[in-house]
Image (tube, rainbow over all chains, first blue to last red; front, side):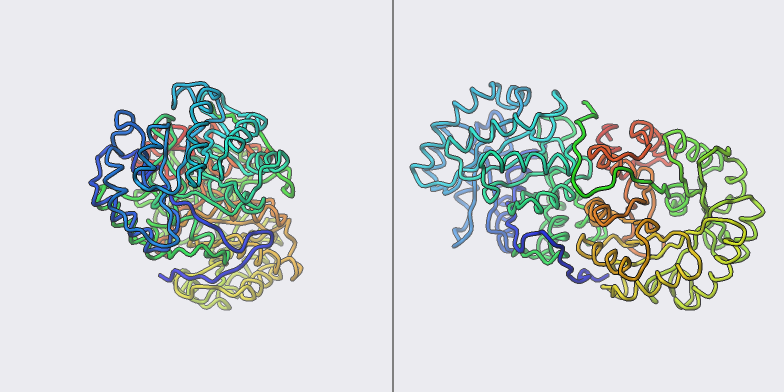
Length: 310
Length: 310
């Protein structure tokens, strides 16, 4: 069975896309089994070997909240430093930032919500309270020269509030940019978005003066919509796409939020379109097959299954 | 968990899409277990109750080749006739057409290949030989006033030949139209297509004078690409999309060809875009959940799984 069916570009798309790989953090934080440090370090190393330049590695959250990532410091200390490769780390508060700075982290991310319901469920705070908590984190990180990504969850729908007004997304996104975030990642945390909604949110952000070059998209494949939404975002000028090796992970606080977009399914699409990612599909598939064996369950990625007969 | 997250249109898409439901034929012909006639009839009835107006029901192929559909005549006799509902039937040759005419079938389909390798594997004939075999079938069916759909497999890639030249697709498609087919269905039989390829094939067909209003697309989700490809086809003017209830089926003669596009995943997208299909998502999901229980295995549709907690 061949894997190369040729390359055919499509008008209106970028020539290069940066994949922000979230599997080690977003994926493994949702594993019920504890994954050994060595496996986590090997996963990141394999992903970098496959060509990734951004691998979100772990979260410096209190182990009480995410016990799966209690080994964050060991993982970070285990990673080889390589030129041009960034290992962003999720940081919930100033204590997390202190740890990040001690560890020599160069890129952090904060995790905000477009809806009050999810802010309450995930952070036990109102949206305004969570932004006040992030303000000194972002300011101090920027002073220290770090890149700061602002995740914005539930941008396209919320399990408690259903439809989320576009104005709500624009309001919180604008606050994150004013705090000093150098990049935004718009999350479809429960995977319900469809392409018109994606375009509407991106258009509204552009109109509000938020540069599309600094806006990433983070789609979940819960309803099978992630790649159609990605294609729509690329047409709107987005060039940073979040994906998770083998489709690992989801969100532990939102029911049915399984199914991060699998990096392999994304790379299949971008390779076919002739869009450069710098990532080698064969090496990614090998990595996800290896990880699936370590975790003892098959990858949910359709591409991984097709290419490994799984 | 709500199921309505609002409707947001996107420019350049049609206001209405006709779904050509293939599950009872294309899905069940690939089931290893024999499904009772009563279950098949109930499946079609449920799909019509959900709003479908075209349900491809069975195949009048010799039972030696597809034993799963040996009950074709019983199924067809069991279906209630309803105004505005069509039950197309796959017909391989003149003997199949004779049976179709005896049974009062109003719509048939023939199954051609864009590649020699698949024509050989699936029909044991060259492409030219298979077209010669279809010629009298199409001619006699048209004389009898039947609608005749021409399936064209492997339009975007082939497991033996890898990339399939666009000119090859145009050549065989043009032959099918000249034979008298009233509609074409372009198949991505192994699910490898990406959006640029889809656009290129559709553009080439339009340039060759084949009307896009009579061209359907038939995508497989083997690599997770089906909905992004569908979106691209809709932008090119296609308004007829093949899908299979619950994602049933594939192609028995092509490895890794599991994964017809699930009707529910398609309807989720079209509902979100405000594109009318006439089909009720809730009833579809109930039907696929019922069928999954009958077949003893979960639906591969992501939407069915998300909405049934599967």
